[in-house]
Length: 383
Image (tube, rainbow, N blue to C red; front, side, top):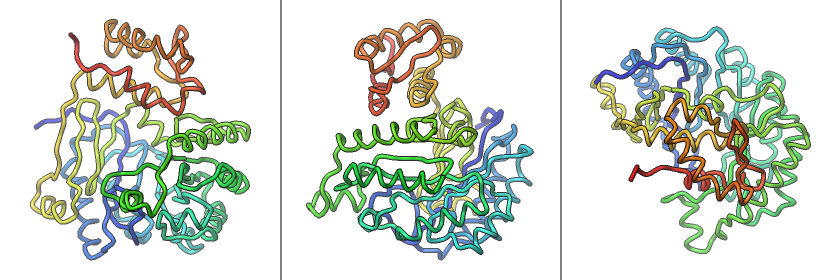
């Protein structure tokens, strides 16, 4: 199958290893490092097998997982060298490494700062011990604070993750989390509502009554507090979950919500080229066998025009700028634009959406409900 080449975009590298399993996580990973070297070699081989899929310039390189900070600086540099050897990379790409606080010693940070990596995304999740224990995180509250303080000595481009809507997390505790991040002067925050994913430990704990259920009303209240406090502090909520100081937007995140193409390598990694989505097998052993046999361990889905429209609505509505009406008309035609505006009427009337001559945007009232609103604007088929 000949695929249309990427014009410009990013590469996502999935590192499928963790020290331990977080109770809420449904991402693909293994706590065994037995085949780590083979997996890293296979990731490099996969890049070479997919060279023709990415003929444009790479603007962002993102190490996700899993826990990429489990890799040594030599291992990370080996992969980055392979990216540069295999693809055309922009002169100053954004290169992000996801890291856990317990991995970030002063020596490790010094090594990372000496590498091409220029952005860190630290998985703090909470500054409170009770939350970290409930989630089974590998770090403690003291390590969370110390890792940020150390990281700021080496990295200007820094982000942290925080989770809200955690069972028994009061508004006061959530606000203290936000205040701690502000006190540490973190330039970028990614904040997510805790979700109960199928087949996770958290789901079982809730079913057995060990942990109280996750409540949407609490998460909505936490999100409203988050938006108000960070906007007051001068942060821009440029996408539903992402907040940054001026000039600190994540290029990787922004590209995703703008529908730009990306190539994902590694077990379970997803790719998108504007016309197709593909995803690698979420199994380290099967991934290794396939790559070592010279075969790509992935499935592909061809996107219809309706699929592309629905994805456009979903991604753009989560952003500050919302849906640009001329883009819908240019990409999909007048019929789709008319459908969008017709479906949006009730949300405009209820003040969950705002419409002007150029944009359709979620209001502050509708922000937390943006995904559900987007789904109501979807098109299933034409009658």
